[in-house]
Length: 335
Image 1: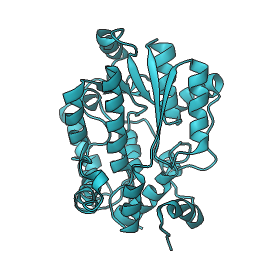
Image 2: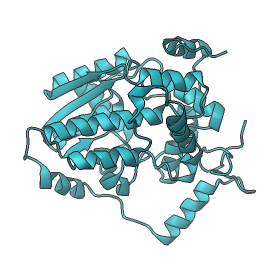
Image 3: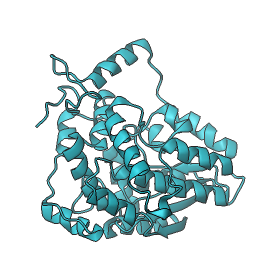
Image 4: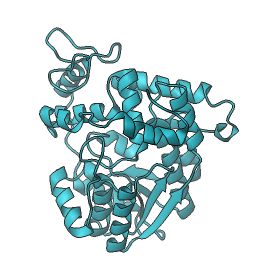
């Protein structure tokens, strides 16, 4: 097993992540220097309220809320309706691997909050997922999926002229700068470099015989560039601006919306699609860590999560039987 950083939970994985003789990774060292040179104030809720106020009330909906049924997206929907009182269109996609538990959470939330709800189910991504696992590609399954569903979200926002897309992304998944321009992980960061290169190689070389993916985007920048030509929509998350910790908003949505944890999940106490188990397994095999390790490590550096708690949440406790139950839907078997 690779050596882990003594401060965060990233492994020694050169050239992107290197642990020095003091047991500290290069990402933590870089964070030390950045924090010493430039310390930005945390984003303020007043900034968020002002941002919403500039473009709300001009159409049927003020925001499109991407709701997966997880705690972060469900609470984001709750805050947009109850705290900020904006007109929301809840949006859930299913690529064939969403769990019944997650969808039940979504249905309870939209019913109790009384918001309009758009559900999109498609088999479009299934051949891509199958090709990825069958070729044992080091590409991260979640990355092309995020390109697809963000493209969908932008298309829907453009169709209804919705100025904001609201995600359930937490402080570990983005930064203030990305709140105004980008979405998802920063593929140019060194901790994502190997994953990003593998994913782009897969998208450029392994799908050429599948005509339905002829125009599939290769990066989030490409998704954003296409989207901005149709309608200027901004991606934001209330979690970037609110001080509430996870335990607080989980208790809130459990009480108010009947939200429930799934029986089996990765990371622990999360709600992700079943395909996420394959993504995690493949990422650990090929890279030695996952994007969840990157997110958790960022939160450790910011004092939002303890290292022992991060290790507990990211312990892999699912088995080969579960993996093959999911992989079988893609014509694959792990041995």
